[in-house]
Image (cartoon, rainbow, N blue to C red; front, side):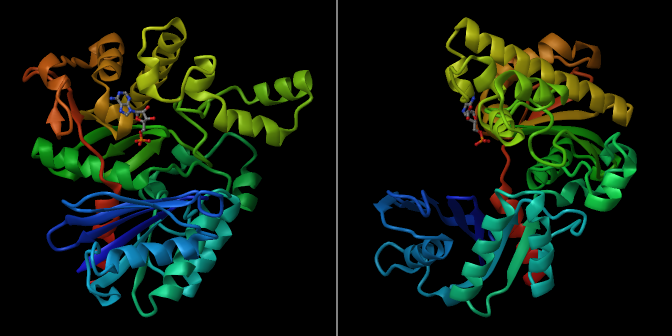
Amino acid sequence: MNILVINCGSSSLKFQLIDAETEKLTAKGLCERIGIDGSQITFSPAGGEKIKKEVPMADHKDAIRLVLEALTDADTGVVKSLEEIGAVGHRIVHGGESFAKATVITPDVKAAIAECCDLAPLHNPANLIGIEACEALMPGVPMVAVFDTAFHQTMPEEAYLYAIPYRYYEKYKIRRYGFHGTSHDYVSHRAADLLGKPYEELKIIVCHLGNGASVSAVKNGKCVDTSMGLTPLEGLIMGTRSGDIDPAIIEFIANKEDKSIGEIMTILNKESGVLGISDGLSSDFRDLEDGSVAGNRALKAFALRTAKYIGSYVAAMNGVDAICFTAGVGENSPEIREEICNEYLGYLGITLDDEANHKRGEEIDVTTADSKTKVLVIPTNEELAIARQTYALVK
Ligand code: AMP
């Protein structure tokens, strides 16, 4: 069965068509600048040439129509008709407390996703538009919602509650939710496979280090803590997001620069992180490795924050068997892994294998045989994880 995986952002849409039985990618692509001048679609059939076209897209429904046309195109498409697409898996950012796992989409599920729009105002509305556009264009095809927050729903109360008046949890459900759950789920399971041990008997820390970044602690098969919170702003230093700061900074800047809370939130989301610390040099970690003082300052702060989270999760789980690195930076930067492990994690008995640490693009144990704690690099594959969960519900 072919599964179409859809990931709708506010002005973009990523898609992959995956054969669920063989788990092979059939095609993938991206629609960008939806609703903005100069929208374009990129379509890459597996093993074929990438096709890029500038086409107007007024909204996500237009985008999905173009995706379906590209998939079924007589010359360059990969399926003969839409009947060859058995189900659609939608990545949904926020499922609140309603969803601890993926679910087949019904009117009630859509209503529950809509209720979470307050908690993820940039993402959930776009996710809903994606669902409705697919329903309109592919009537009768089952749709599944896979939530970024679901994997973290196993966290105990002491990990998810903030130390603010309890009534705010009761009234507004203000609590830690965590994100990147599909990736943390996939990578922690792969870690258990690579270690050849039962998932339920391991203590695993997953560092998803990309433009957005988060760490999770997975103990005996359950997520017990994670660094992102009510929103994806908390925790690690990210490309442009601040991660943890003293909340009093918000009032301080507001008073000094006569700014609104909304303006400061934009600064914390878009102008902070390594971009902010490097004084505007770049949010891309590759650019920060240019040897400049500003780039170095940002990389050092990023590594220290990540190492501190790892240390706190070792404490939360009373030990750790494996630390996993994944996503753009985690998979591709041996320097960052080296800085984190060699500078700060010696007390865990970690010894990196330099040659293994410099390999690219494969699942690999980057420690020496006698390393007391294993460090694994595991390329994440959120789309495959979404396709698997979708298939499991509809087959
Ligand atoms: P992601 O959000 O997982 O797609 O990760 C994207 C980020 O990965 C980019 O912004 C880059 O900063 C980072 N990245 C990609 N390749 C490398 C690399 N070779 N070295 C360091 N960082 C990289």
